[in-house]
Image (tube, rainbow, N blue to C red):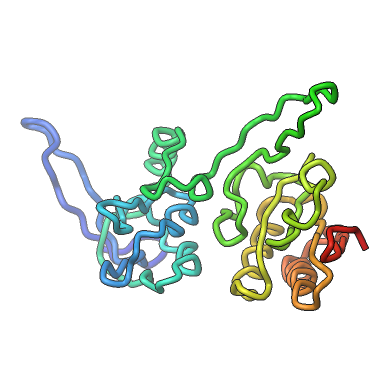
Length: 257
């Protein structure tokens, strides 16, 4: 028997209550496969999976339900150990309604085992700060902030003015929070030490999926740091969007160029 897409279907009767039966649909389709030997439990795939099909259990990424996996493989490019692949096998059919119910149940923020705030998507409000206090308050309104960890469809990216900053800028420029983070969603990266192609791909996905209103790139004056501008221009072109781009350069002594 085949479904409308030509996938081979089999059906199994399984008991749910004494004297009752329910129908479970099994299909030949594509699903993720996780190599536990390679997996180091970093949790990047958990963040990347919009359906919540993967969780870290006993230090390893595991597919918690076949019916939650859509088989599209958004998690593949996020695994630094290349422990995830897509294979075609018989399993439970993808159940969109079950996914919605699952996501509703797991709405509450649950940090990954490492406890790092950058591994959990969260958004929070900042109260207005009185200048009379004489103290400087953080303008950050979300986690995570490293580009490799940010899901392209994170809620804080929707319709945002996005700031892409190099890792060194906040250390060099004293007014970074007030002058750049305030009113923006922020992501960080280093074009010298990070995977520049992975960053370009992630930024492209963000622009495609989150309706970003503008993109500001803040980088150091050293030549390698201008790679962030290259990433931004390439991502805008690849996304098919016409996102306004602004470039700001910070000197090595913390001055604006």
